Length: 72
Image (tube, rainbow, N blue to C red; front, side, top):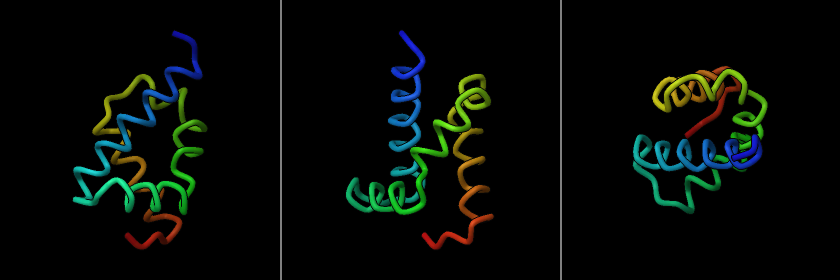
């Protein structure tokens, strides 16, 4: 598996985790991920994220969202 494939799988896992944690449907989760550029954030943080678990990565995404003043 190359890095781009790994990034994609990481994005999918974190998207599904966010859906569960936020208790939202796929449409709403997509809106949030697109509005706050979470997919880009995951790709930017890949070197850090790929050595951590999904829960820790999700916590980091929540900190990022809080820091930018995102409203969920």
